[in-house]
Length: 230
Image 1 (cartoon, rainbow, N blue to C red):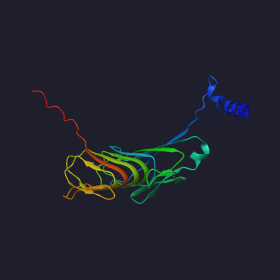
Image 2: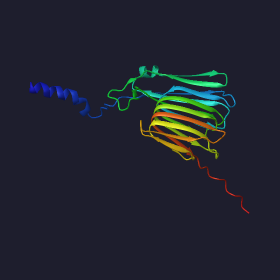
Image 3: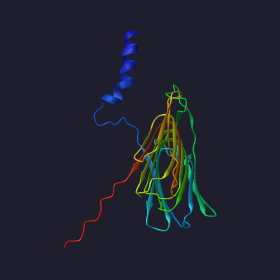
Image 4: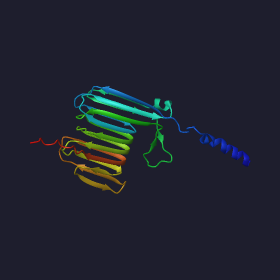
């Protein structure tokens, strides 16, 4: 019996001991870039996104959407579908993918996916942004239009270039809200949440919500142009 157990253990771990054998699974990656027309002062609506989402303002009139999905199997990637459609002045980006509850879970909101998904989206700076995100981080950089962003778990991070303070309505149920702009902070003893409000009138409105995680609002400090030489 002891010999049998020894042989079984040797057979189990032998592939790990052989030189030149890589036991790590191969990762399959698929990347796609989609360029489309985007209406002036239009709205980008991102629905059911997951993973890492980055939206960046640029000087071009159109929109560029790059998605990169990776997994151990091609079959798993085929079940992840990202599609864009136009509805009047609104461009809607939707994501469909399989998911299931984590066990044992770390937080009540946690789910598990068998793939990684990264979005890189460039829009005109005047665009309005509406995001409904699942798990993962949301980064929005240099966008001057109104922003509504909601995430279940992860982080929402904004970087604003304009000098004027925006109207801010931000709340985390389980986390913190950190802002470079002035406003009123409220700590919630249960469920350990934090809200931040700046109600002054402003050309840009921010409505941010996250279930488990932090919200960060940064004011970009652009270097000023040097004075002309006398």
